[in-house]
Image (cartoon, rainbow, N blue to C red; front, side, top):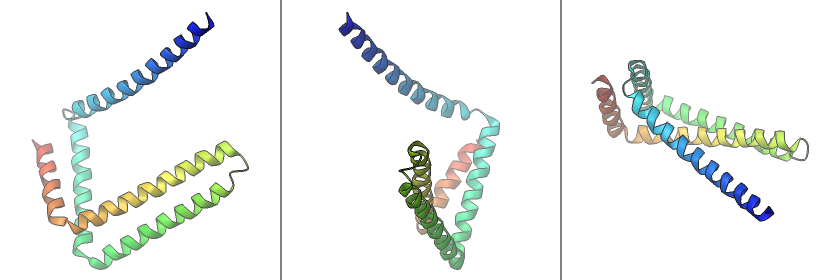
Length: 142
C-alpha cells in the first residue's frame, strides 16, 4: 500500500510539473496572439521600437557617444559583477538571503552584458537593423 502512495505522489508531481509548463507555454503564445489585436499594445510596441531605433541611430551617427555608452555599460557591468562577488563571499551568513540576492545580481549583470552586446551588434549592422525595425513598425501600422 505504501508503494502505491509513493507512485501516486510521483505521478501527481510529474503531471503537475508538466501541465504547469505546458500551461505557461500556451499562455505565452495566446497572449502574443491576442496582443496583435490590441490597439494600445500595438501603439506601445511601436513607440518602443521607434525609441530603440532612434537610440541606435544616434549611436551610429556619433562615434564619441557610442564609445562613451560602451564604457558606461562596461563599468556598470563590472560594478554589478563586483557586488555579486562580494555578496557571494557573505554566503556563510544568511545563506538563503545571500543566495537569492546573488542570483539576482548575476542575472542583472548577464542582462546588462547582453543588452550592451545587442547595442554594439545593432550599431555594427545598422542598415540591416534599420530595415528590420522599419518593417516591424510598418507591420504594426497595418
